[in-house]
Length: 62
Image (cartoon, rainbow, N blue to C red; front, top):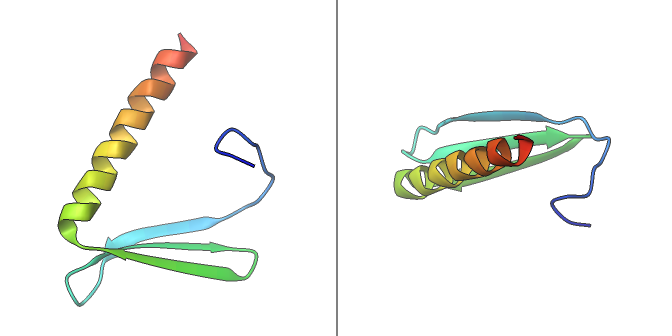
């Protein structure tokens, strides 16, 4: 299994601030809940990685 392995799994994802000043990515799939908390600086780094991955994916489509 890897990032290129397709799976037929439906999941819900929520992203938002917590009341303690963290950024939470909350994923729920098939009865499993995964809360992931990041400090704001880590969240900024994740956002940058997402943007870079989106740009790379766009370049592969052309």
